Image (cartoon, rainbow, N blue to C red):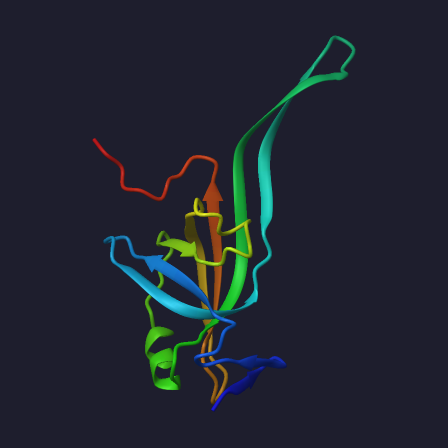
Length: 148
């Protein structure tokens, strides 16, 4: 039986789920079906201005582009027991995260890999755990293993 969470249907087996894949630092991927509560995307960069002799800006270099997304989701597998099992997933800072939601190009156009920067989990009595993550994607993909 579906539960109600913050006024939205919490759809076990419904159509409002987004696959999220978390790959731990050992390289083992786990995919969960998620009902995303919020997914705000913020883009920042480092700006270096060049000025002329009068102090007017003549040019700017933009580097270190970062996309950061603090988001919240519930695990929503086909049963409550499966959701409880998957939401116990041990997500660590440094894990890689990908989102499979082609309707949201800022996070999934086939090229986005995020690094988990912060992890939080909240459990309310009688409800599935709310998972809070802050993830970052950098101008240069730094999610892979370093090679010698």
